Length: 524
Image (cartoon, rainbow, N blue to C red; front, side, top):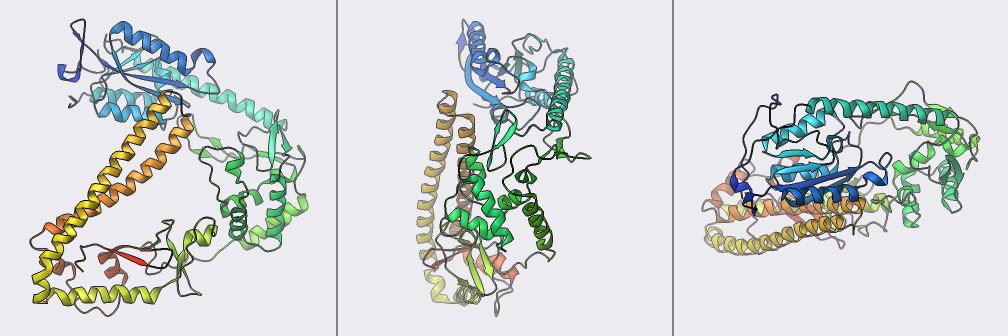
């Protein structure tokens, strides 16, 4: 089924926001009339919406409205986020599906549920115009089917202005609380909990971990080393203690640095260090002065220790230039954890970055790949290929070898196609589970983000294999390969230019075996 699109002038608000789509866009009839396919959009903001306007109540209203009008509900999109922001997953999915022609009308409680941002409101309007999609709001403010769009601009302005006023009132209230010594952040510092706006030391081992971090740093231990030890001991990370949905069990030097720089640990409240520029953006700015109130809660460390660490941090600040990129940087990867391998000057070779940064708990690959040895392997490989291109006997058997490679690649492509189908099916299953309230929004986002990453990698592999399959099928393979090797018939050294033109990736397994991925079909 193909969506029927007509470009409309987005500057003309006119009598209708979207023209009536042709009959081919409707998939059934109701009482002899065409049935509109309906997308439901429901949104709440946890800070401002009561149970009366909850998502479930909104959806009940939508179902009744769609039933009364004989519409077919094809999808329900939900968000639990501010309407001033455009990066809402439910809204993004709805827009993508609309462009794909999945539905004919968007049903929302009011325009503010779709957008409380003037620019976003007009962008959404233009997208609907260009894809022949109607917008219907249950408060009767907007109904493009009946042509009720004359006040669209007024409502867009009112909702953004209301959000801006609410934001100003909220900032003023938060500023007053901060000046009165109350913690206004959403997540207390590691080692603390919040009790009615006052920071209280947690009754677990996290305060002791904070003391340990400060002590070990004062004793000369580096942030990377502290992070690696905490990871190896399976000490809960700040994100795990905060119970974030995407919490990582890995400590990073950046986490250690944040703790070492946090003045809260010596009993002071430091707040309002940044503020949003406006309600329509996530960008933040640094105000003229942060709000600092001393001695508001019990300290975990003394001010003397905090100041000593502060001086050490300043003296240890690196002023050296960025590390030199070596020949196989961004080319050589660990097969186990897929992290890049880092060059270690003292070993004249590369080691797994995941193991170096996080230790054995993250990756067990401790293999050292000598740069000179790897260079020699690739040089010999390419030299053999150059020599073989001019060998008549090799050319005779080349086609048979290419046919065999073609069969192998075709089988690999089949596996990848099955994997792509499986991943897309899992995405749909998760969406269905979310719609049935079997998954939380955070769980859905986490699963979909993971699946999207897998799909990107799979699609990349698919593209590479398809290119190699095309190469195998080429009648002029030897000529094309000769052109790729043109100018390097005498290869004495592996330069970065030659490496990146002929090799796409090298992977190292746990036992040190290397897999070299060339930018051409290697017929050996």
